[in-house]
Amino acid sequence: MAEAVKAPGTPRKKAAAAGPRKETKKRPHAPADELETYLKLITESIDDDKGEDIVVIDLTGRASFADRMVIATGVADRQIAAMSQHIERKLREAGLKRILVEGANGSDWVLIDAGDIVIHLFKAEARTLYGLEQMWGSDLDETTEGEVTRL
Picture 1 (cartoon, helix red, strand yellow):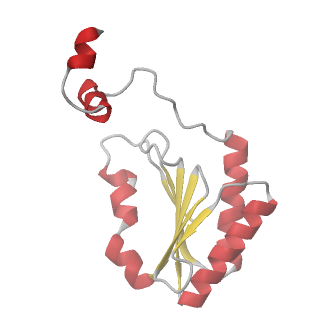
Picture 2: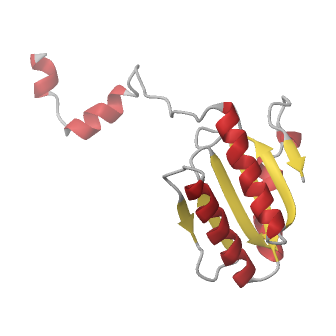
């Protein structure tokens, strides 16, 4: 123990050199039925607001930040902003507490982080530019774990 104290470097550098801790905390997941309830609420809300080309991508086992990704297209900035507000309100009413929204004030792309579900609302040009379906779709995987569902 005395050698560790004498070693040069800050505690942060020493921790980085030591590598990750063995007992890392896993991100808690919502129960499957709750996840499907939220997913249905999100896709129905987008459909009610005339969102186009709704895609649901299963990220289970492929990403640590979420289990599902929903991608949809809106025609105008105002429509995308309204869709994000409606989704946020409906999820809060359903009991989801932590919802983060980025880009909701007049942007080509709105991101909603609803914990286990991440929602991307795009204008058509931005959706084509970023190509999230191609990036996260199962056709690029060697296994068929990730499933892309078009609604």
